[in-house]
Amino acid sequence: MSNQKKADLLVIGGGILGAFHAYHAINRGLRVILIERDPRPRGATVRNFGQIVPSGMDPHWQKYGRESLRIYQTLQNQCDLTVKTEGSIYLASDQDELQLLEELAAINSENGYRSELWTPAKCHEQYPNLRREYCKGGLYFPDEISVNPRQMIHRVHQLLSACENYESHFNTSVKECSVNDNGSVVAVTTENQEYVADRAIICSGHDFRTLYPDIYRSSDLQLVQLQMLRTRPLPQVHVPGNVLTGLTIRRYESFHQCPSWLDFLNRWQPDSFQQQYGIHLLFKQEIDGSIIIGDSHQYAAASEANDLPFTQQTAINDYMLSEANQIFALPNWDLEESWTGIYSQTPDPKGYFSHVIEDRIHLLTGIGGKGMTAGPGFTKDYLNEVFDD
Image (cartoon, rainbow, N blue to C red; front, top):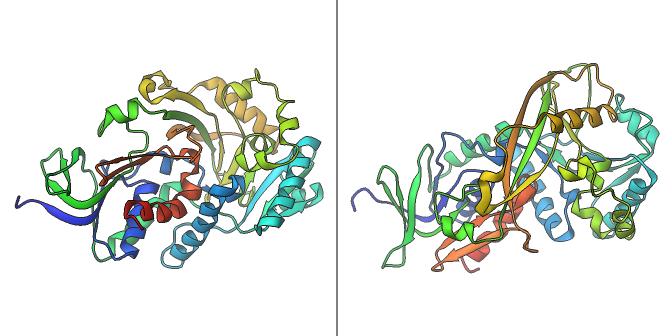
């Protein structure tokens, strides 16, 4: 057809996975077309903390996170991606959590990932608003970074738009994607524009209804809904880098490899409010002085997406603020805004969901909460599978 546009790789979805698949494909010298249904990405990629924390990942995913750190810094040298290299700190609230930090520090030493055990005094020196009664010590990762999640992905797209052999189409919805008799991928938009490519990657995030809904509904994918908060600007407060707390130590996978993890797990209270809603406390200060606080986790199977609440639960926000006040003493806790985010995840041990159609179309989603940290490194590796390298 005369209105066909052709490429080596078609990427459907402009979030973190879609954008970085396009980035790495361009670096391979491929002709790439990216299609995004919204005028700007507005899913999980822009609704998170912007914390890039390989320290929280298991050894397999940490290698992708560490590669992502390198990629972010490389791009920061080309364009201001809002990268800040201020490290990450895990704060222990009791001796059990402190023991896990000490064990993880030893593991980091063995695998060559820099970390530093901090005394309570060192933590208070760096975080003057930290309540002394909370902190029993910390584990600091100096190489980790943060970004502004609402700006970073758009600046990546600006970089991509300047590349040869690349074009993007935002505010464009694909209604059908299939392999034709010639073995080419053909995607048709709601405006009946056709895009033809050798291969396609569909990074649909949590949209399980538009393309191949039957595959998603029959999968083991879950939707995860989070609640997050942001204070009004507090320019008189300084909270550098990524701050992760005792509840995070109890949640992140990197601690599962620690020798005392199982004993620690057996002492949990499974019926607590915090456990019921998967709450852990993270903090990250934005450039205007506001502080992002969160988050909670509620789950629904892909086939039961409507089971997730469409409203925020005040009790969850109140709990997070109450717990946050036990950690930091701020001048006030007035909120600028609160919001929900949704991502998809899978219980599959490989840590993501993929499905290949006729060796040409790759459905890829379900990376869970790892996208911002591991996405740039993971997509570089996944392209090897797409192109049979």
